[in-house]
Amino acid sequence: MFTGDEGLDILKRIASGAGEYLKPGGSVICEIGSAQGAMCLLLFKDCGWEDVEILQDYTGRDRFVKASKQ
Image (cartoon, rainbow, N blue to C red):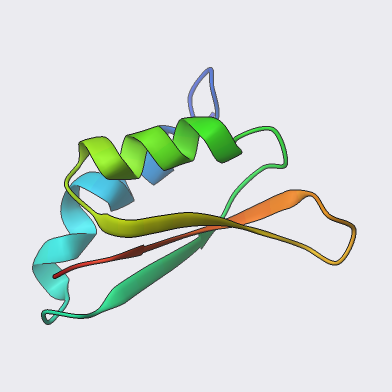
């Protein structure tokens, strides 16, 4: 399984490493599972991202995490 038991392994890799590929002010947006919003919010904040927010899809379910590098 690529995503691990909680389904977050790939998101953990992105949260911990994607910032080095972005210019200041750059953002990353990742699709997430509808039950992963709270975990992803904490994950990205813990990895030092700023302006972390969870965006919903058209049905009101958590669907994306958006985070910025300052």
